[in-house]
Image (cartoon, rainbow, N blue to C red):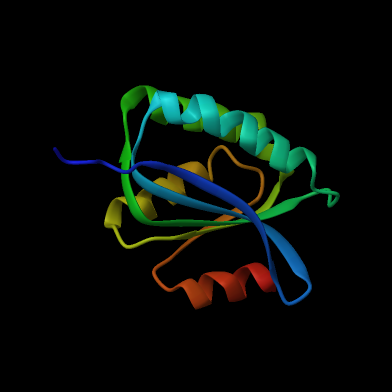
Amino acid sequence: MKTTKHGLSIGIERIDNKFYLSLKAVGKLTHADYEIITPLIDSALAQVTEPKVDVLIDGTELDGWELRAAWDDLKLGLKHNNEFNKIAIYGNKDWQAKTAKIGSWFISGEIKYFTNLTEAAEWLKN
């Protein structure tokens, strides 16, 4: 029997003296994942004292979303769209770059796609 890993890890990390929200997506995200993820992200964002949050998303192990989970992701982004300053998406798939461009239509902060983690972190730092 094959085990399929999927979900999202959430953390608060720091580059030098600047804090940011760290997300790592794995596998194909489901609606059930978002039922757990959404309150965690809501809670993590509520704890941030800065008026705008920087985010680093590691999508190198993300395979995509089920349709309902994609809708959940859009709703989550719309709910918090004014809370983001910069969102760096680190990935390794062409569709992720397109997703970043589409996401920029719904988020008030800047979104940029990177294929290099160091470059993504440097962009957030500046």
